[in-house]
Length: 322
Image 1 (tube, rainbow, N blue to C red):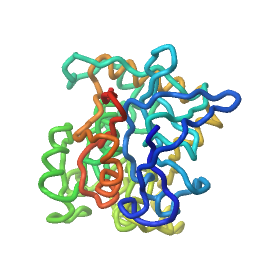
Image 2 (cartoon, helix red, strand yellow; image 1 turned 135 degrees about the vertical axis):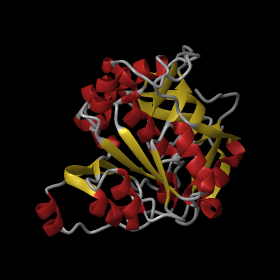
Image 3 (cartoon, one colour; image 1 turned 180 degrees about the vertical axis):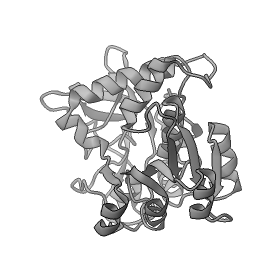
């Protein structure tokens, strides 16, 4: 089979090589899945650079989430067991981690969702509640940011999206952001305070770190929450705890991989809720680009360089993005 291998640390376009290898052999409690579509994530670039919190042995195949097919033809979504990642024709996953793939919804996205859907969105994100809170999303037109925007809207929040550039601003508006801020031409702090009447954001979703985190601390509301998702900006901030104390806000870490081992029932619960929301048309993955397996290295590099909008998906074989 074909699989992308990383044998040294560096930029994805430099160190990823498409190679002919044997199919991986699943261990006890694992399953071999035919990869149909694999999402490109910023951590894939971090894996190539040896900067991710998980460091698989060399050589390894990147690709941290995918839609695959079981031997009996069932479509599932799963997280692969490294070093056998998803940028390949076949990948390995823990059997308990292979969840039924949502059916493709033909229902138009609903701007107004039921109260049940709003509660589901809140539970699955740890985010805004029913008091019409304001959610600030950094990198709102990116892969995880676009998902946060949709979940925030489904939960009933007023969503402020921060993006970089006119093209991404247009995408954020299309997603339904109530306020869109282009950080390249606007002052993020001043605009957020103006948009919220000086209160600030009740919840800040931050997958960027660095300067974005500094901005987050200046615009988070009294008793608000900053949800730290990642550090796509390349800099890991050092929180000033005296500021946390004076302003009474919380800093929450959100590393979803830990939930699979610590809270598997919660993962299953959220999967069921998200599947329901998808079926009702309340959320829809923002897949903006589909590339063949041969284009995976270039796709990872473009995500790393911040050049993409929404999700970029690598298709393996005759796979289609679900």
